[in-house]
Image 1 (cartoon, rainbow, N blue to C red):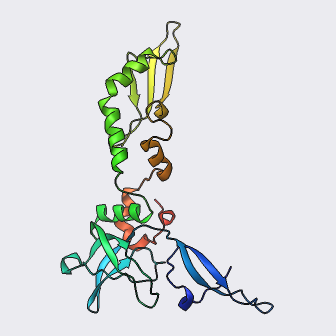
Image 2: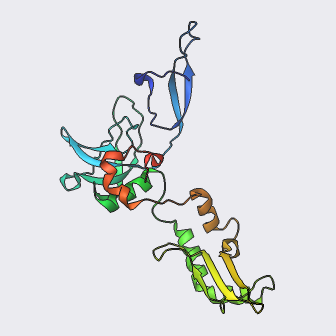
Image 3: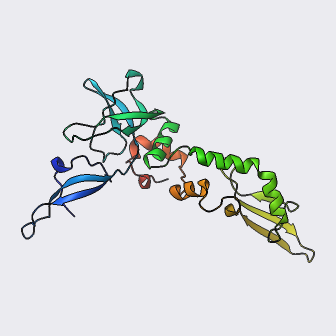
Length: 244
């Protein structure tokens, strides 16, 4: 560990990748100290928080309590007070002043169920929407579904189970239906239980826009509804801090 005094943090924010200049080697038993020379890479493209008024200026109160700066919001107004927003950092080169930020999206009123759920997702670095290339690729799959099914039927490695009673085990509000069970009685009197897992690679090809976006995301997010009303008490800016 290298001890960085608060006044020598410079332009760095929580979890940024930085370059550190070391002070002379410490005396025996003391900690190595240094200063942040420059920021190599920002940890976040956007920051989530609530709009509040401090003195005469509108500021962002970050959800992430490790963000030690109060971003100034030149575009904010009284209608945004108490609203949860996503902001992007503007050019910042003077550590003596707090940075300006641009409001990129209004998530909703702080404290409301849907607002806080979106804030957790966005605060964890997960985008709410998809790039246009991904939307286009998904639309193309939908428009080409007849040909996709025809190719599947012609594939000797695949079997058609549409005549066998098959049901998904995903809930009605799932975003995808990719797991299923089938059941049928066999001629010898036994029962066959089929376990079906969607073969996504049949539709999504390596390095196409959907595949690349999936690699960037790399996870699914599940929020337990009963946790949401408790957010003001339990939220500590870390997805791992939530316990159902």
